[in-house]
Image 1 (cartoon, rainbow, N blue to C red):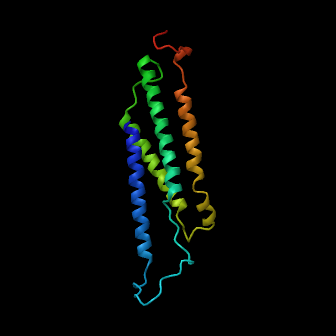
Image 2: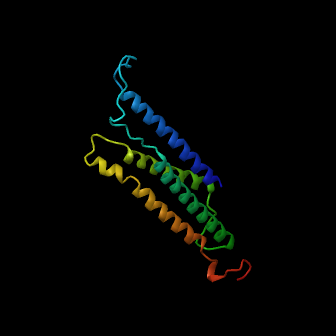
Image 3: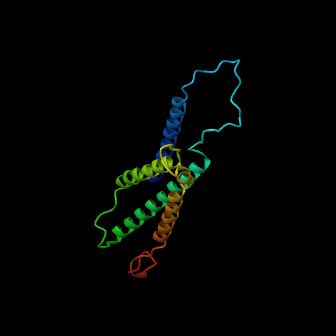
Length: 167
């Protein structure tokens, strides 16, 4: 449960920071003085700045956070069970705090990279193509994490014993 709470915190905090960063960038790029009331407003047909953190971004990165949380939780539960059963390859029970911090940092870096890929860059050749494909890595990793979590949840006890008390 702590892992899920931490992942949600990291996701929400990162989205807030990225939104503030985008707002600061937009306000810094406006170097013109404020238009007087007598001037007409800019036409709605003009180019609008692209929002980086939109519904699709939040949905894709939220799905990635959920899949990573499910994978971490299922792996931790499997390792706890193996440690309790005395499996020789598990020397100690995993530390939930260390796993949460390590995987939270990995998720934060994935979030940052996806944000940077989606953000427009004037200096980058082929930027339009890259911006259109920002979602490929998060979606692929979401599928991998869900597959790994479902495999871990479907694992049986050693020697195929399905009953808790059998040996």
